[in-house]
Length: 176
Image (tube, one colour):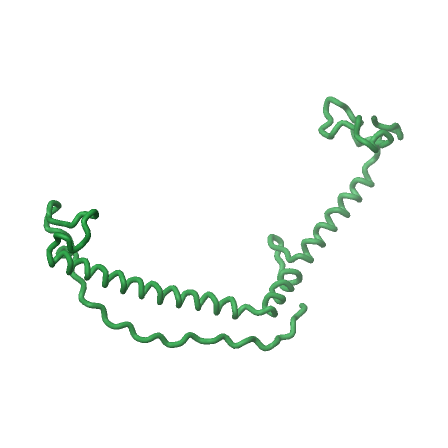
């Protein structure tokens, strides 16, 4: 099997250590975060918060804003970590590995159901050679004469270069 000389791989930079995330403020429990009744005084979307709303609603909105900022920060941090992992996996795949993968595909292990490329070409050559030998051994009388009723090929009339084609089994007569 062919092999590619191993050239030193580039060093992948490591991620800097992220500072610890401060502990989140205590979040309200689910029942207390929901209004007590469907008709409670929840500010409508048309009125800005603070205009005619109570202090508890302002506090609730401030808590929701703080929670959203924490979620965005965590989402950004997670996205940065996943992006760095992706970059490292691409950087770790070297040209030498790609070359070795292609060589394995061409000459590597082969099975009957999943042959490598060389075995696949060898099998095609063997099949064509076998088919040619079978056709050569077939007597000319075994071939059918052309017939318009059972012909699935394109009609030879009007096709350039088909007027002088002879078919086996017709004693050298031309078709067309």
